[in-house]
Image 1: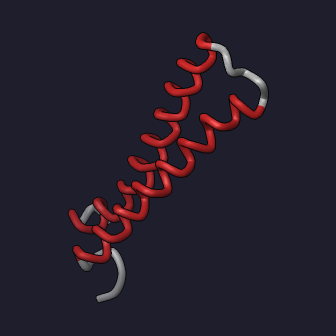
Image 2: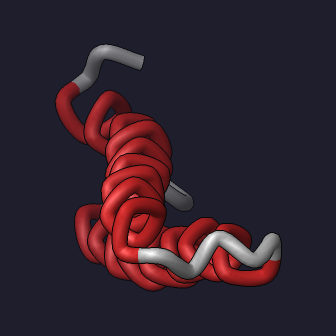
Image 3: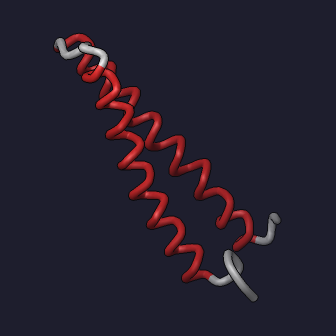
Length: 73
């Protein structure tokens, strides 16, 4: 078997998704600063938005190997 049915490959993929989520979350936060929205009001919004982006990317992409490992797919 190749790919996601092998637990350690799925784990490696999910660890990579953690780093991707951190990277994209930082990019989403930086987008606000690049647009000049650097006040305390927008900083909180930027952090919430960046965290939501990171979590959404991680959860969405991690559901794929989890579905394969659990036999859903």
